[in-house]
Length: 339
Ligand code: ADP
Ligand code: MG
Image 1 (cartoon, protein in one colour):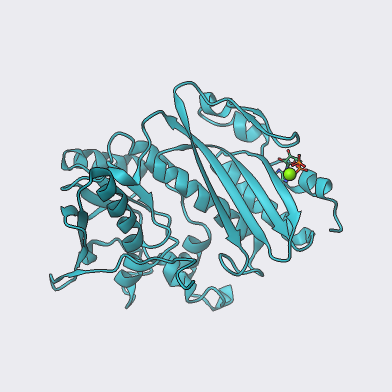
Image 2 (cartoon, helix red, strand yellow):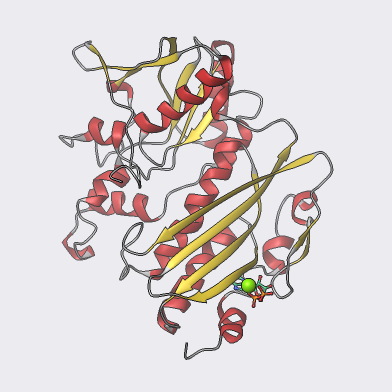
C-alpha cells in the first residue's frame, strides 16, 4: 500500500473515538466504560455494574453486500447502521465498535470518504471506534463489531413470543427493496419517491431508542434485515423451541405500513412482506401492553403498526385484501442456499 498501515490508521481511523463523542453523550455511566481506545494491543472496557454487554459482528464483502464502486461514504454509513440495528433489536445501547478492514490498495479518496461516513454515523449514534485491524486483500471486506450495554436480564430475545401476542413493526417496510431496482441508475434520473427509497437503502435508521423503550414491554424482537416474512419466521422458530410448543402467526397484508413511495406501487405489499434491508424492528407484545406501545410510538414520533397475532401451529399465514388467509414462505436471503 502506498500509504503505510500505521499512517493509514492514524489518518483515517483514530479520530472516530474523539472525546467529543464520549463527552457529549447523555449517559456517562455507559460511555465512561471505555478505558483505552485505538493504539494499543487491545482496547480496554469496564462494563458498568449491573449491565450486560451485547456483542454482534457482521462482514460486508464488495460486490456481495455493496457495489465495489459504490460511494464509500454511504458504504461506511450503511455498514455501521446495519450493525447498530442488531443492538437496537436486543434493546441495547451503543457503547463502542471495532473495524476490520481489508483493502486491495490504500486508495485515499475511498478511505477519506469511508472515514467521513463512519465518523458521521459514529457521532450521530455516539459510538466511538475503539480498535480494529487493517489488511491488504484483493477484495474489499468490511467487518464491524458493535458492543452495546443493557441492564442484566433486560435483553429483547427472538425466543420470547407467546400465543396471543400482538405483532408490530416500526416505520415503513419495502422501501429498501424498491431501491434495488434502480441502484445502478444515476441520481438525476430518479424521481422524488425513488430517491426516498434510495436514502432508506443507504441510510437505514437503527431503532435504538425504540429497542430501549421496548425493554420490559415486548416479549420478543428482531430487526428486519432479510424481510418481514423471514425475520418473523426467526421469531417463530426460536420461540417455538424455547416454549416447546409450535408457534405460528397470522398477519394482515393490508396493514403492512408503506411509505408514500410505495403506497401506489404495484408490488408495495410484496416488497413490504419479503424485501430485506429495511432495518425496522418487528416485535411481539402481550395484549395487556398494547396501550404502552401507543405511548412509545407517540413519545418517539415513530409509527408502530400492529400487523397480526402470534397463533398456535407452526405456519405463517397472511390475509390478503380479499380476506383470504394463505400460508406464506418464510424464506429470506441465504448466502449458502445454493451449495
Ligand atoms: P496488532 O499488530 O497488535 O494487532 P495493529 O497493528 O493491527 O496491532 O493495530 C494497531 C492499533 O490500531 C490497534 O490498537 C488496533 O486496534 C488499531 N487499528 C488497526 N486497524 C484499525 C482500523 N481499521 N480501525 C480502527 N483501529 C484500527
Ligand atoms: Mg492487528
